[in-house]
Amino acid sequence: MASSECCSNPPALNPSSGSGHVEKLGGFDSYVTGSPDSRLSVLLVHDAFVDCIAVLSENHLLMLHLFGNAGYEAPKARKLADKIAAAGFIVVLPDFFNGDPFNGDRASIPVWRKTHAPEKTIEDAKLVIEALRSKGVSAIGAAGFCWGAKGVIDLAKHDFIQAAVLCHPSSVTLDDIKAVKVPISVLGAEIDQMYPPEVIKQFEEVLTAKPEIKSHVKIFPKVAHGWTLRYDDEDEVAVKAAGEAHQDLLGWFLEHVK
Image 1: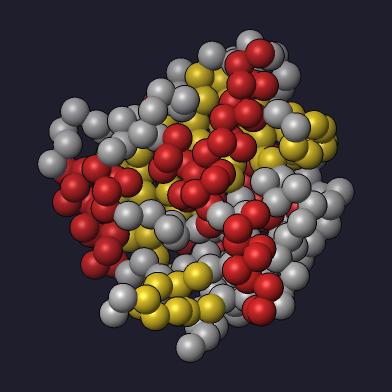
Image 2 (image 1 turned 45 degrees about the horizontal axis):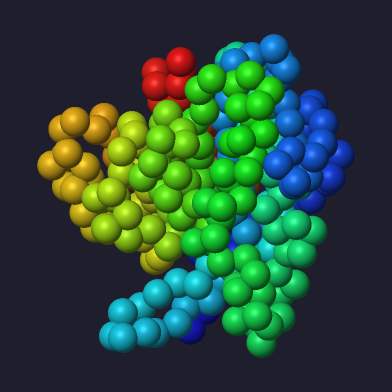
């Protein structure tokens, strides 16, 4: 069974978009924007998309959200990076696909996923974080979008970062949420077959039971999975919701990455 909600507005691609530049960081081509003198950084972990497939496993409906050929080149992702950078952060958006995005061939998903499993992202992200630390960065926040949320939640279980934001997450479990050790914000969508509001509310219940960890959970009405980076510029409601989510994300990092 296929879902169209996350595939209806694929991003335009432009490798040269944004006001920043591309450089190698931790071994990865990375879009970097913001003052190089900043000691505060935000790591953005991209989503992945070309197609969206649902699979049934052990009586649970799971969405295997594999979209490719976007990631760090998506103009809207870079636009968000520039916006965060304007607030005083050096923002890094690495290509964690290493130039090998999913090509849309469903038969190749098992092989592609072995190389690009979201569970492996933490090891790649740690290399980028080490590179940032070597440049004098003292505090780092990380935001993950769909595919990228798994890597960010894994980072949030340790002291690699100072704050985390998950935007329309995938591959994140309740056990992941229970293990969080840093301030975390979860932004979900009302229209999301992958992680519907009832799942996001379960995350909220777990976080509420951990008062020692600052948390923020919000479900955005009238938007679908992926809305923060895949909104339609002609849709005023979608643009407004994306802008609100971006402001929430930025506010979280301004509060907790110091």
